[in-house]
Image 1 (tube, rainbow, N blue to C red):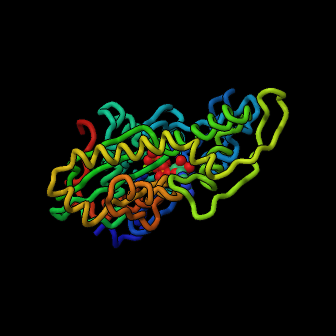
Image 2: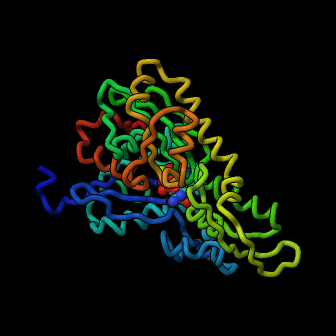
Image 3: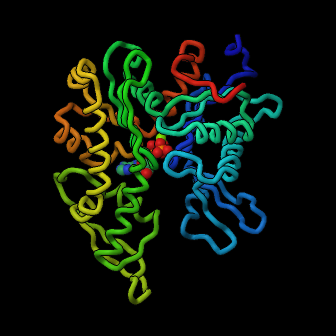
Length: 344
Ligand SMILES: Nc1ncnc2c1ncn2[C@@H]1O[C@H](COP(=O)(O)OP(=O)(O)OP(=O)(O)O)[C@@H](O)[C@H]1O
Ligand SMILES: [Mg+2]
């Protein structure tokens, strides 16, 4: 059996190629990589100077000849060449063997087109995956990773809020019954903060600062204790560095629009759910996964707006990769949940 051969351990990989973070699960081992989906490129020769954590640290701080690029946008590949370089680097980091190509499962948002899916498979193949690359839909992987009983004849609702997309899906009997993928998630929330600070305070802040504010101070429901923090940026009028004071109420106001869009996506999916399954969801609740599930008060907000019980996955940032990893461990039994890409 392949798994008892130590040389083959870790050869099969499951990859969560996310807009914000890429995670890799190695068969028989578990999660072996968790890095931001960022590449710093030397624009003179097109070579990567840093990938992952190191590249993210450079964002907004690069000299002219280096560009920090996020090759994915809204859950799909925006810069194919850079994406392939990034994948190759990550795969080589966890799969040292030059002699064999790893079998691979890679997950994609539920709403993507055939062309977008093919691009993900091509990137993985160019980066060293064995053909054909298996595909699993992100909400299915998220549901499996969050321990929902996806094979049962009952309605399981999962909401995965990532960096680029929010995926809402109802799953029963191993298949997606109804799903919606909206391109409003973490990045839009960051942008909303950036725009708010610009408009209300004439202060320019970077993407990383906006994300930091969201993580530290973002909320979707009034907090028990509202906080205030000093935010530094560049004054748009004087051009000089300036500090402002921002409260958690301000941040909530800044986030109001994209948060409502996420809430609406959940509501419209519920609206399209067949009645028997809706009754199950009423009983078992809605499971939140993805980094956005960590936002303060999002569970209360969704409970208030939908009347459903809301649960947050134990490790929401890992749900998708764990679910993809489980599919990899049981690749034959799980075949029905995946699709083989292309014509091969
Ligand atoms: N505590 C937190 N509160 C709010 N947002 C958070 C928190 N922690 C992380 N995030 C956000 O979660 C997002 C990353 O989540 P995740 O890794 O699930 O996305 P992804 O899988 O890369 O993206 P996608 O699935 O859309 O392609 C980022 O936008 C990050 O800022
Ligand atoms: Mg994701």
